[in-house]
Image (cartoon, rainbow over all chains, first blue to last red; front, top):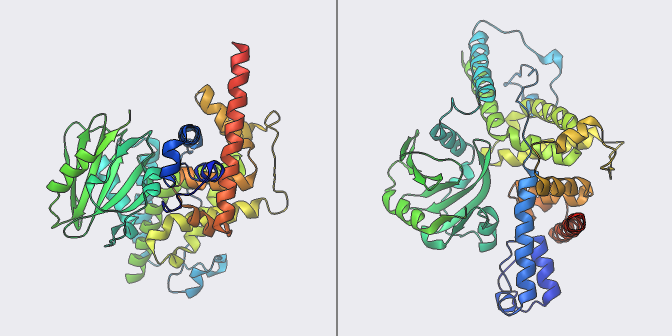
Length: 248
Length: 176
């Protein structure tokens, strides 16, 4: 949806908003149409309720029995690996097996004991590893609609003062859906995670393989700011703090 | 030695994916099939299939989309011949009603029931948009539909939910 579509009538506007409550086009129309304003607000409130209703508690994670995969075999990329293709474990295989057991135990402990054993900093750094697409240099900003969809008004208010936002997606940290944003810094992309329900008492330093950052206490929650190791983050931290306000 | 290192790295990659995306996989499956037990089965099958074809995942940035696509296919396989288009909310099995039973919250529960009762074609894009943060073009790609069709379905889904909420509010007002 583009903001260029200014000549909408009420019906067209309401169709657009009902399909995407974050729709921000037809500003001229909605600014003078109280009924459409009310409809838009109603849709956005409904969406906040839908988001809450959809959040089911996942069961404890149990992995299925995983067959051994011969990674040298191109057939492993197919969807089926027959039992006949299993190979016996040579002695070094026990190393892999031991590593697997350790990792499974790690997951088990995390699931059974809650997230207390995994620090928020670890969770944030692990999450970054899984969204490398977010970490591309870009000059294309996300649309206002996309930003409003990922950072709904019920969670936080955010203006564009933080910088050029080139990526926005809802992600999960510690079992909670949080806005994951990327702005372009001096040395490359900088990740911002808005975590309104993750309080930290004091600022926590993040130190990954090639990244550094900080989790800043903000009200009853926190905001993580992570960039490349040589990225100066102080200015970005200040601009993010001044452009974000929790809604609750 | 190299082989065992590769095996361990493969397993580590898989475990990390599972830790990060298991909840999303379960919630997507649960809202697709509307049954807690079946959702857990679908996720187990999807994890197994993901493990077997992990080497096909070249771009880790696409991991979430890849896993959700596997969940979607596994769910379709499960219901290949007996896909339920509608469910009578007053006549649920224990496993179906377990999906709706959490700590009580009247308004959330009413909306959850309303989402539960939505037809598949309306519920799925809504889940992908609101819960997974997908754009309408991404939903269209995943569901193999045109973006216009997705916009129409999302529009209708919200109007259905809006009407249901209004009816529930009226009924509550009458009781009071």
